[in-house]
Length: 153
Image (cartoon, rainbow, N blue to C red; front, top):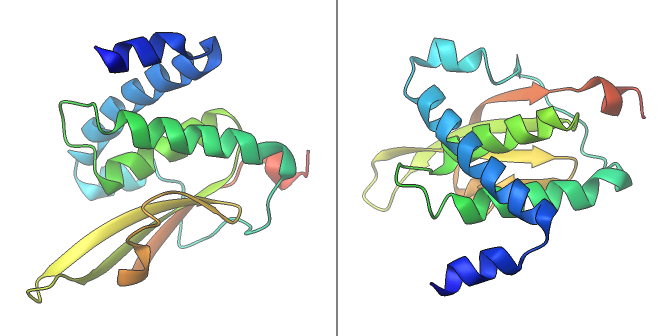
């Protein structure tokens, strides 16, 4: 009940962003269930990266999207782990014409088993997956370069 009170105490734009994140996470979970060849079509240009420089005007927006994705992923009744969060974050940034790069990595767990991880970066800010990314070797990345960022507008 407390969480509902907190939600309704938020400003209107934050509420809309959280609700949007919830629905985009659902879409991303569906996309993840498809064969990877189909998923890759939604991820952008393969084996390219966006700039590490920050567009100062986008920093607040990027942090808000990161917050919304990371908070709402805890409240979905479906699995919303690293790849789902990274895809959802990328889609939300794309909608707002903000560039991003999604990384896919592999590594080994404590038992020596192969594991995978995904994370999302925009400029120098990591929106999702940053807490684990250093344990993984990048095996692929996808970039969404949006015209407004590319032109410096």
